[in-house]
Image (cartoon, rainbow, N blue to C red):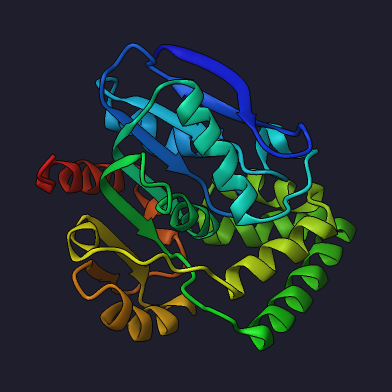
Length: 267
């Protein structure tokens, strides 16, 4: 797989986003935005490496993650602005597929507001659809900070817990969590409790797919929000799965599902 690394995604304040740009000679482009505690490399190994080389892949490291670990995560808005800048700077006007998992999905929702980017298929995995939920923010922030401090004190325990949930990728996720600053954790918690849902035309809704595990908390909001806000979107529940577990359990099978979603689109 031809690899090109770039850090030209810009945002206010002169901060840069590390972005993997794979197979830049290919015409059709796929955007992959990772969940919290993953990275661009994580999305590359889980999805891009499985889907084949006929696509160009744009895979950003969100702030406080991967090669952008030293940058404080401020907001989903700023993350989406950096991704948009990169797409514009590299003359990418159409995405065959845009995929966002969990926190990556919150960022992707912001990106949908840019009217000069064409989206063929938009797939969300385990994205929070909670809006203006101050209580959730307080609870999540408290829980994450408590777990973060505990992980710093006992890395081995943190690794064991993550590995039990996400397999071998859990080691990287635990270390990512330990390395993350508390300011970023607070901002991520806030963004996932105050999600900004864009207005989408019925046609654009039809290009969207929302996946959730039957055991995950964010399914509660999705079951209320999706029928009202995005009634034309596809909504599917992975029975017996927790948050984002479907991706890590069988990346090859999951990538095949994404490929099928691409083929089912009209573009």
